[in-house]
Image (cartoon, rainbow, N blue to C red; front, side, top):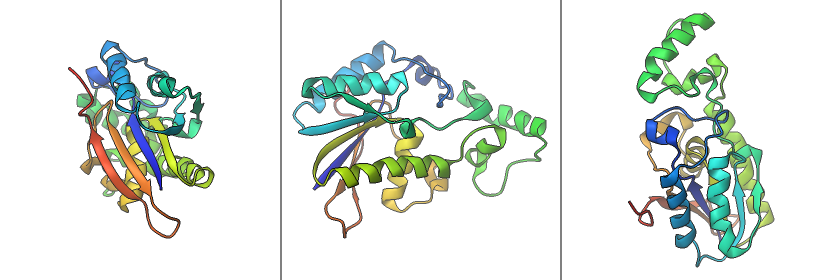
Length: 213
């Protein structure tokens, strides 16, 4: 049995301020995020982890290093675990996304939102990346891990949209439904592969019981 533990990085100041934080913002962990990384390391200390993979962004990489340290493992950095490229929405306050997106669409010569995909579906029109593209590269990382590890425990430390597209793939949900799911910074989810013949199972989702205030 192969278990892949999906960890969302600890908190940053942009998480706290509710700002869009994509692949072009290398924001470090804040003090709360560092405590969350330490709590994650303690929570996963007894797991027999064979490898830790991470996005190259500092908020993920530093979280991954905290988890890997007790196991004396080097973090394997994979650029396919980068957060979505949010294009011109990078750094925008979440409360202002609708207004700013409308302005950007007008500037780009597009009239209104499409019937399918909503605001997330418009990101490629403003210089960003589609959820399908994120899903393809993120699931490619998972497939590579499955090919290289037949059993044991593997940790992936990444970002909201990367982990969510992996979970959508496991559950057979279209990525257009991603907003029906919510999960927290510093959270743990896990996917279990029992055999080549059976689809993977989502064994744990958005577990935050290890986090301390």
